[in-house]
Image 1 (cartoon, rainbow, N blue to C red):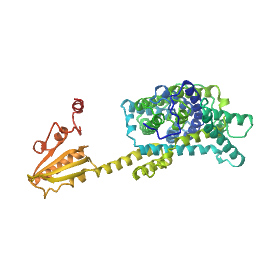
Image 2: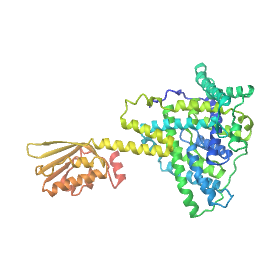
Image 3: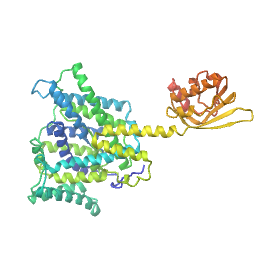
Image 4: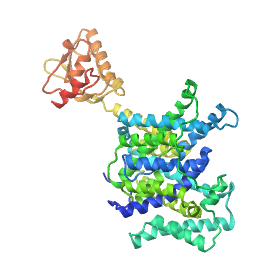
Length: 531
């Protein structure tokens, strides 16, 4: 497949590229995980644990090498309500919401693993290109707007010198990332930019917001902590508990899988390779189950960090493993140094991700695609920004499917002629399904047709049960008017479902297609198709 994205190098990657890109991703994961933990109302360390466990498990066992998973904002928004309601259900001051979160993550993981086991990951390939384009555009806008919060201090927008300093450092980071690849391919642009800007701030004694000040401003103390430990969520196993966490688990599982599979699809396009959706579902599920037992926030695939990884040359599983292990090292050993990194450097990296994520060719194809496709792109983009990814994608698929059904419903047509024997022929063209059934029925002039009529389906496709039913109704109308009707070139499985088929169907085994519509014995159909 040919990628629409020209921002990315089509390289095979190497161990060096994977290691360096993994380190870059780990640095970018810190403020994201911390910020999403604040959104959910939990400790930053829980967000970092979640990013580490999600990243490590999916990097090793996932279906898409080079894709990065961690704590995400889409899930954090849902977790806010879960934790708030969980706190209200427990004793006052017990803060049971966190325990309910861990239990919900375990159930979420079970649902996601079940989706992979039953091979539901393949359905991502049914998402139309217009929905995919709206998705990446919406995500680019969401990533951009999420970074604007970094231009605040203690809830107030930066002004004056602090704002100017922040803007200059962000611009410097972006300039390095843009210019360095033109000079040499041996150094990763994002990691080099972070190190250079950090050195400028540290040795130049520049007063600007750092990772440490960002965490403190959010109510945290730092990112230093020990290893995550095994704990069973301390909640009662009752019907009340299950009825409370199950809806949240289903929502989290759906959002997580949609975002992960959509990101997988995007990375496939960027790298011109193919990931394995069902395996990714299993890995995402396993990672969330582990998060539930080891006190992590959980999460799913992260489009921003995944694109940083791909842009930095990360192609293999090693890049994700290095990112996860480096993040753990930050937590255990090097928190002091990581907390010195200026937020401006990380914001600059994410702004370059926005530039690389947005499908700029959207503006070029405005006059080249059908109006309906453009409206789907616009709708998915807007809904991704206003609501969330799951609602946007599901809505986009529904609208695109309805448009497809409507357009195909209008393609059913009948060519009519009467032969030398006075027999009227209806030659049907186009797909016959629920959308075109009404139009198909209107093609026949039962009252004025001769006593013998032939309806030929050689150039038509019988798609569903609605098609079978409308054929039955048309046949009954002719029979009620004492007219003989012949239905030709129906597949044998369709004939079985036509009432009184032995009297009104002419089956030609050599020419009839096999549509396998509403066949009771599926195995028989598959065997017949393979014969």
